[in-house]
Length: 157
Ligand SMILES: CC(C)(COP(=O)(O)OP(=O)(O)OC[C@H]1O[C@@H](n2cnc3c(N)ncnc32)[C@H](O)[C@@H]1OP(=O)(O)O)[C@@H](O)C(=O)NCCC(=O)NCCS
Image (cartoon, rainbow, N blue to C red):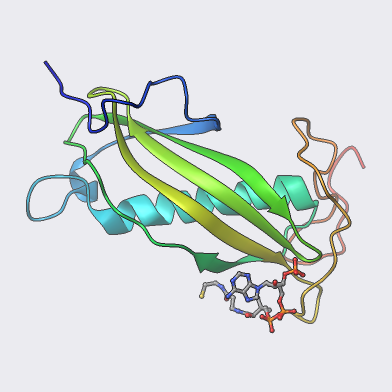
């Protein structure tokens, strides 16, 4: 019924954890009536920022690089899409991630991004060593300070 965009690809083999699902709404569509790429990129960038914050233990992270993106398939209004990320490289101040986005309804892979690089910054906006070298699956690196002030300890800390 719904042809897959890659016969060799199997739904369970993307190798990333899927954290977030989105419901494609009218405001997310382009003039063709399909998912607007800009909406999807905003969702991915936000997803990557949250992932980087939780991996690097620092709220002050910025997007440095997003590698080539090819939109292989799309989505229609009402479709459900899911986004997954995994860290592929812990640098000194940076984190490199791989992203996969899939349409849960058509079971097609919408895109993959091989490299999304975020950099951890200090209060002066300069790259700051994060000191981590592997993935955490827990919340043990959750930042303890309010990102806007850097000085207010959140409840429980
Ligand atoms: C992030 C920023 C502070 C980095 O400054 P910089 O002078 O490139 O700093 P560095 O050369 O020390 O590099 C910092 C890290 O980024 C990595 N990096 C730099 N350029 C890169 C590139 N083109 N591709 C991938 N990684 C890169 C470096 O390898 C380094 O990582 P490491 O410490 O893990 O090895 C600066 O580029 C910046 O402020 N950019 C704007 C970021 C931003 O505002 N993003 C939001 C979208 S507008």
